[in-house]
Image (cartoon, rainbow, N blue to C red; front, top):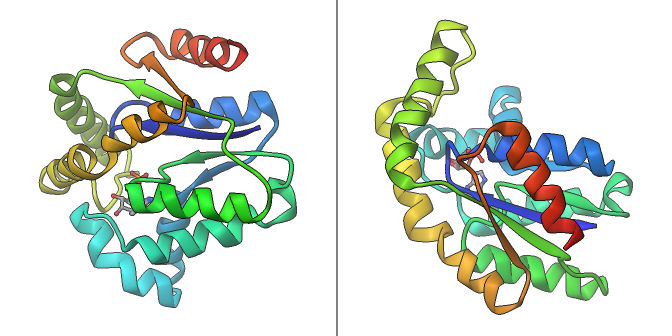
Length: 192
Ligand code: AMP
């Protein structure tokens, strides 16, 4: 099964993607994790994207599309995957469609975690404070970067819901339920 999980920063997307990946026995492909690994390893891509990711801005489409194209061609992704944090722009979604079409494949389902935006900033600021006190804060967990991440989501990523709805692929789930309830709603949406 080839899935896309959509959701704003703070919607619980990463947590749910990890659970779903385990349950379905397919890899979770998080572009955020891949980019953070590149930054911490100091690779040429990492050096290129460090400042952009730390500001909370999106990195260029061509760069992230190339990373995903390479990753989904690996053996462990042959029978399926769950994309977490990609696509984030219409151009990325179109590029993904093209890559899959060339391999005679397609996205099976797009799941969206719907979270009231008013709840998001306080939720992610709390999470960032917790992470800081545990010594696990991300470089983009500052209030300034979080505001940019939310604005990027609103401007660039939210239009993807319509893009996938028009293709009949979108299922929206209430992301404000408990973690377990969201997880079971996602599984139900896949069965439907
Ligand atoms: P995330 O862990 O998904 O919140 O991603 C962290 C950061 O990585 C984002 O704020 C962007 O700077 C960058 N990033 C991750 N995925 C993408 C993507 N699909 N397109 C552009 N930038 C991305």
